[in-house]
Image 1 (cartoon, one colour):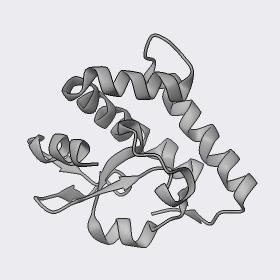
Image 2 (tube, helix red, strand yellow):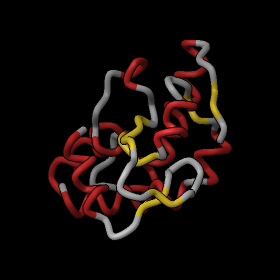
Image 3 (cartoon, helix red, strand yellow):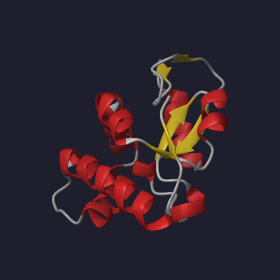
Length: 129
C-alpha cells in the first residue's frame, strides 16, 4: 500500500477516485475490492480517495454504475501506477485479468465482473457516491 501512496502523493494533482473532488495532501488509498473480502493489495486495486469518502464506503463494493462513471479516472490512475511501477503493475494486472500483454480495458471489465460476482456470492452491501 505504501508503493501506491508514494505514487499518488507524487502526482502534481489528484482527485478522489469516487467523487472527482480535488485531493490535497491528505488522501487515503482505498481498495476497489475491499481488503476484508479479497485480501488483495495489488496496485490495480489501490486508488486515492478522500478520507471522508473512504470511511463512508468502508468495506462496501462500488456499484457498477459508479465504476463505469469513474472509469476514465480509474484507468488514468492505472496508467500513472504502471509508469511508476511497470513490472509489478503489469504482473499483478495481467495475473488478475488473465490477459497478456497488459490490456487496461480488459482489466477494467474484469474488475466490473469481479465486483458483481463478489456481491452475488457474498451478499455484500453496495456503495454509490
